[in-house]
Amino acid sequence: MDPVLENIKTRRSIRRFKPDAVSQEILDKIIEAGLYAASARGTQYSIIVQVTNKELRDEISKINCQIGGWDSGFDPFYGAPAMLIVLARQDWPNRVYDGSLVMANMMLAAHDLGIGSCWIHRAREEFQSQWGRDLLKKIGIEGEYEGIGHCALGYVDGQYPAPAPRKEGRVFYVK
Image (cartoon, rainbow, N blue to C red; front, side, top):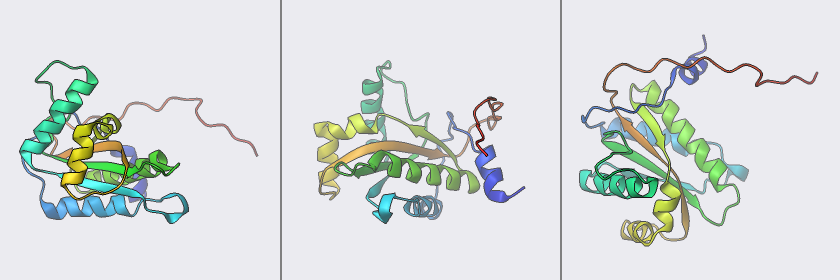
């Protein structure tokens, strides 16, 4: 089978990660895949923020947990030691679509490189908050951005999930 199609068919969301750090070399390859995602009119308005600093990673986890309404102490990033946060210019009508393609490219690249990934939501709420706007300003990001998603990354802890059967009746042909 074509390696790209095989990668698409075998990638799964991981919800249990080892604490082992992912090397910067691997993270750079995953980021590069995100930067090559298609974007409407070739605008490339999506940005990626890498977070491997444990204190900031844990702070983001705590805020994400509060937004999600989970009990204190739950980690919505499932122990992933790294995250790549995708944001897109808030004034761009295709921001969610473009940012989603960045996320998909990064998850597929991670899988190809032996790294587990999971798309974690609530980035929009995080970066609409004063905390999120202050964080972006602190790291030198100017302008108004909407959070699209977090790509939680790490080495899989346990068995790799098997694919669920594909539902039937989802393709229609007009010839």
